[in-house]
Length: 79
Image (tube, rainbow, N blue to C red):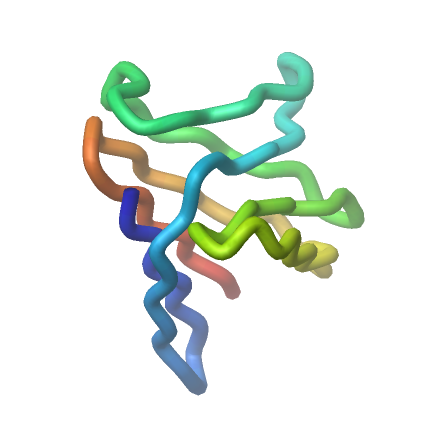
């Protein structure tokens, strides 16, 4: 699964195994072939993803963010 993270200053892409997110409706773990959807992520919570190498990465969201997911990719928009 490909994860693209876009902010005002940069754009990075990673090949990942899964993503863990926090929303107003709870915590979710997303894997490849997840139902396509869009999430509003909660500020001051962690966005965690596992790289294809097995390494875990964490982004603590300073503000709300948007995550758009397809069956093969995810796009995280940071403000």
